[in-house]
Length: 269
Image 1 (cartoon, rainbow, N blue to C red):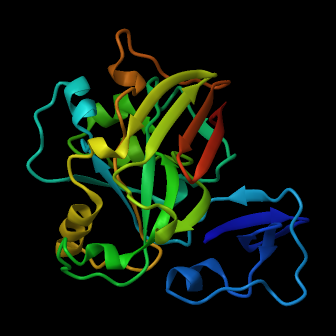
Image 2 (image 1 turned 90 degrees about the vertical axis):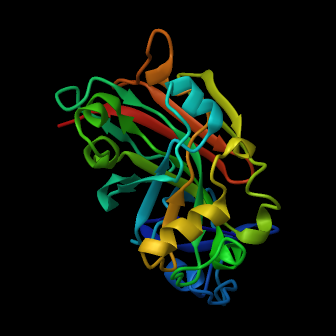
């Protein structure tokens, strides 16, 4: 099934896709992520042309770096022996058509990373890779926007990855059964209409079950937590010459089965 946070006629609410279109549900998204059965709200009409918002319910967002073999080769780094972890902060979240704020006084090297994101559906504590997929609720799309110069300046990536609006999510949230194999999903990114990323999750170094096993060894994963699983090759910071986005740029990320994030870059305050 496919769910979304939508905005329509001044209201924000959870909707589900039915054969005729989108309709308001009788459960909100946090409850759905926790396993509540959702149906169309009694008497609810179809939502014409809904505006999709980020399908985010306030949980922890875990980013995984250096998780695609071709990307690691492109960057010139050795293969990591375990996942490289960083957080995306709550204020970094924006919607699938929200603006990304790029302040040249903060960063001169704002880059893109199209990604498949995993949504957790059950509390997970020290689960094994063999049982890990039972803790997955479903999937959404993400753009792990990154300030490369800020990222390089620190021994960790919190500032470079966690700036406000640097985590577009959406446009919808799919239940786990909607994607047959999360390790065979196409991801593409366009910058100002030019295709710059065209990869597949089959290139992941650490697959979804391994990531959940690793994370749940150290942290309790809760329903609604999100894992960004890494990005294919084609990021601007590792092109020759490097390429970045600026106010006026448009970033479009498409994850097969999920849809497109389409985010305009605007100047910061």
